[in-house]
Image 1 (spheres, protein in one colour):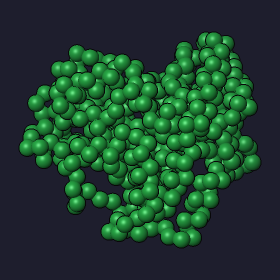
Image 2: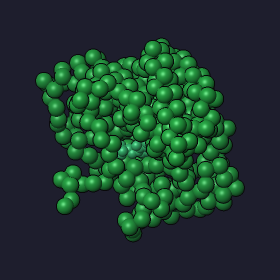
Image 3: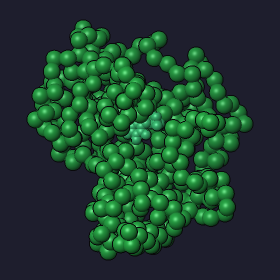
Length: 395
Ligand SMILES: *Cc1c(COP(=O)(O)O)cnc(C)c1O
């Protein structure tokens, strides 16, 4: 008999019933140190007092009104995002997938309005992840995600990560945009070198095409800058955001320059929930913390400490781990033994990590992770790695 919840997830046998900062409390009372943060969502940890206050205050006033009306909280959050980034304009969604949908629509509409309706192709990269909608799976193009779900949304061209010649060859008269994650998340924490992002920007400028960055996972302070592309000094035309922006409340956004957004006039796109008062009140409280330069400096400092300790861990357990990679608090442990064994061993030590592609264990803690919690995380990772080593030797 089919379970009452559609069985599309492989769930660990854990039920968390409460969260406090970097900690998750299981139904049986065990306290897990959370290095997953709901997959880079709980940027300020669990039950952050400022977010609880923003949510409950707004909940007592007004939860939802239609986008048929002006929404002051939405306006304030858009103003804030525009003032902190490259963007001139923002559309609010409820998820990363929805942000992908709009990013693709926006790029195509741009060329349509410019009198070049043939320019519809989006060049994307293997190993990427852009969500589970028809556009999202077509953009990622991985066999695993698209199999059985055809016909696929046409107009996506795939290039291997780091295949520079292939990328140049993929750009034709029908190319509308290049779509890329500055740091691949699901693909296994693969950061795009700054030089490559600069090269991509130059390539887009040379061909007059749009650069779309998917910062759903790597954005909102995760790498130690508000957005990951800031490390390279170049800016996109369109950017997808979600995950951390709501701190756990479902919220996403598409940020764009005035030029890139020029096709999106009244009636061309919409959402019932996107940018409702409740979501935006929380989003504003999240931004108050994440856009603070002192907060981001703290993230960089603590993340550097974490990384240094992880390098030590990898050296001690060279049979389990190959390397540490990533940036800020978006880190991956490339494993030599199956990553799922490491994740399972971490659960036994009351530590939450997240598996990713390329046999990587992802570490995406709340950005508030303290120095003491970093030390505790290393202790638990060390014990988990030892037990994985022992089991591998025994079998
Ligand atoms: C999670 C993710 C998405 C999809 O976001 P949802 O909120 O799950 O729809 C898209 N792109 C990237 C890079 C992601 O990590």
